[in-house]
Figure 1 (cartoon, helix red, strand yellow):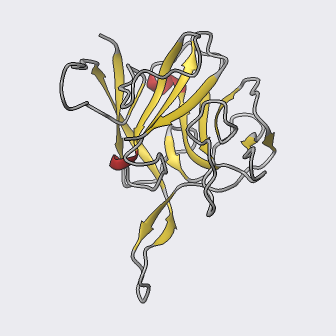
Figure 2 (cartoon, one colour):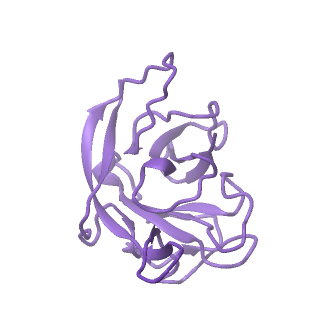
Figure 3 (cartoon, helix red, strand yellow):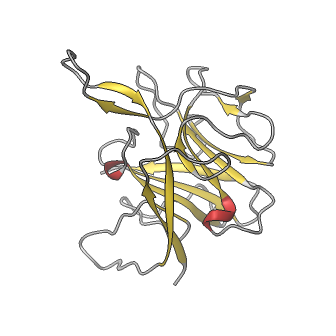
Length: 210
């Protein structure tokens, strides 16, 4: 059984240079903000992962930054590994997606009630995390899949096995959109999966939904 790191979202601000969700990236090297293939706008920042915190100590890249296109108008292809609408930036590293030298850009938000407002309104979101190392023990025969928010370990796919390519990929992050304290669009009750390859020089992201 492999180890994984269960994610607990904390109601506190993260320390600089630590794994976190939302806010703005703590760039390790130069800013590399990925750009939507369809709209030409900056993608939305979801999280940064300090790789040594989640069991990838021997990497040349030290940080991974997850982004996905999320705009007022629907953009297709955010679920595809190479659709040009999501990206995992590794630093240091040689990233193959289109980026701009933006230090700040769109980030996570949650929908909240506001006085005198009939509808929920977006509010900026940022949080630290608590990581608990556990042993992976997935019962693939169970009628109910154990979908956890986690780093490392084994992916639990909700629509069948789907890796970015035929290369060897290791799970970097698994994120259940129905069990997070912020808004993220992975379709209908979707789950996002980030992967890093065996040589630790490429990372890809996909999502599946019900």
